Image (cartoon, rainbow, N blue to C red):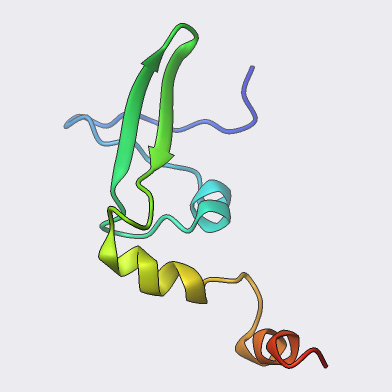
Length: 76
């Protein structure tokens, strides 16, 4: 039994639960890799080296407000 459930649509599109999208920074246009394993299918976001947008955006997506991020940078 899984913690999250997605649904395959008519055209093969899968809805990824919002909590997972937020946790892993999945946004419209994010590239995913699918790997066949003995247990089923593993899904992994492509690395920053493969996605130039993620190299910039991924660094900004800290899950905290910009004020908190700046305080952290300044060690306040």
